[in-house]
Length: 113
Length: 118
Image (tube, helix red, strand yellow):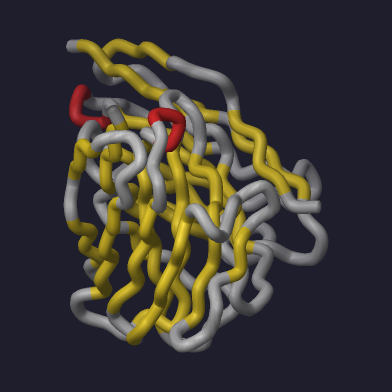
C-alpha cells in the first residue's frame, strides 16, 4: 500500500539555523510527492512538489529532492526564520485518477529569535 | 492559486443535532472533492472522496450514514454531520481538485471548520 512517514516533532530551532525534516514513503507505482505547510489558524498550503525521481521542488528557500533509491523526500532550508513556524506535512499522490493525497502525520516547527 | 472556501469556520452545537459544512471552489471547477478530518497533533485522515453528480466513496471505518456528503455541483460540496456527538468534535477540512488530471494533480485546501459538540 501507500504510506508516508515523517519525523516526529516538535522541531525547535533558533533563527538562521539549518532545517531538515525527514520524510520517507512507500508506494506502488510512481507517485508524486508534496510538502504542505499549515500556519497557525490557517488551512494547508502547497509548499513544493516533485513529480518524478530526481526532481527537486523548491519554494521560499525550502527544497526537497525526490529520491527513488531511498524512497525519501526530505525537506530542507538553509536558514529558517521565525515566520517559518508552522506544521509541515509530507504527502504523496499515487498518480491514479480520483485518488486523494496521502499525508504523513505532520511535523511542528518552532523557530525562536 | 485556486481558492477553496469553507463555511462556517467554526460551529458549536448540542449533542444530537446535525451540522452542515459547505465547501466551495471559488475560481475553478472541482471535479473531485475530498473531506478530511484532522485530530489534534495528528495528520489528516481522509474521510471520503466525492465526484460531482455521483455518490461519495467513503474510507473504511467512516460511517456514511453519519457523515453525509453531497457534491451537487462543480463548485460546491457539503458535509453533514448527523446526530452529532462529542466524539465528532474535530477539525474538518475539504479539498478540491480541478480538471481531469490524475498525475501530480494539485489539491487545494479549504481553511477548515472547527466543530465542537457539547
